[in-house]
Image 1 (tube, one colour):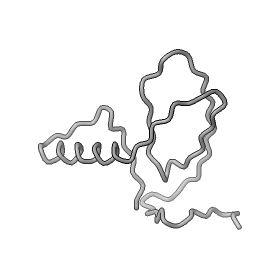
Image 2 (cartoon, one colour; image 1 turned 45 degrees about the horizontal axis):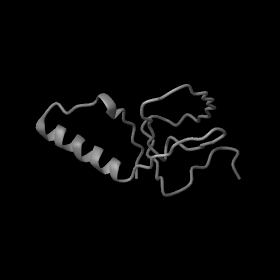
Image 3 (tube, one colour; image 1 turned 90 degrees about the vertical axis):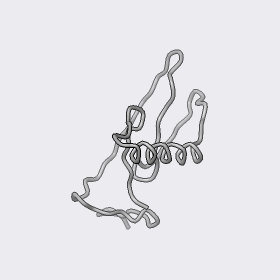
Length: 91
């Protein structure tokens, strides 16, 4: 498995082959998507290297707090996501 970065909401294929590939990707993502209706005090922690995420239309008011942590990897690093990522200082 490899890291995938995609903003698919405004993406379109420039050729019929690219359009078909994008359609196949969207279909595959839909087949494994989980939809969650959030409740007050819900908390979600995830790794951007291990999941894709998005949201639908926001209805009403919301209060959202975010906390980010990061580690800089050298350009071109290939991740084997079946193995845990260990950082300097981890035991």
